[in-house]
Image 1: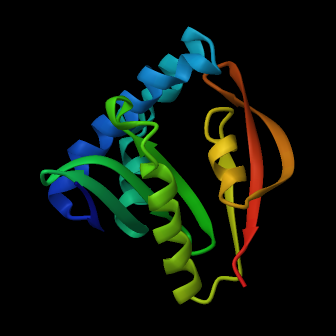
Image 2 (image 1 turned 60 degrees about the vertical axis):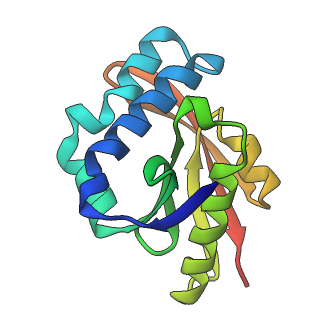
Length: 156
């Protein structure tokens, strides 16, 4: 059974792996091989940024037999910054469950509108959770262009 809990410092390397695995395993469904390589490298090439997101935000971790398999991060309080699931555990509703917990925490913190930057892959899950498209942007990373969707959900 999958159980969720708050982030623990001993989870950090597992979250790097989850991020990398999720992008490498699922990214090619919406992105080129070059884009996937650049995206998947984020926790390693920009470790300080990744670490700051995880450690200074509110991060929930989904586990199976006490082993992290997915996570989501709220940082700052009105922004769902990260949602990643190991490929072998994808399609089981874990991302949606974690989003629900993040939404609940955002409400507890007084947030009435939660935003996120969704990928081509995550956009359908966010739409199922009631997020609406606000804008579409083209972002350049390492000389490659990525499409992201600015989405929001009213929590009130």
